[in-house]
Length: 77
Image (cartoon, rainbow, N blue to C red; front, top):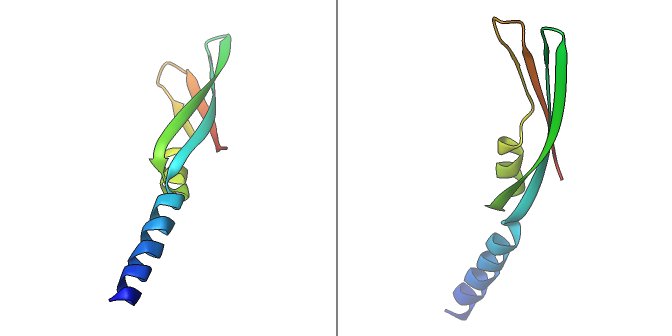
């Protein structure tokens, strides 16, 4: 019984230490039709593991029929 409680205590500590707040910094650029702009956003991913944060902090590129291109370059900090 003591061994089972010890293993459960260790497992709970490991699970708690893996989940934490992580930040994702995204630089978004909009270009097309002779104009361009950019902005930077910092997103806080609350209580996530590293793999969850990687899955949610993704870079994207979208091209619209109007010729506008929106690029978002995201990095996990």
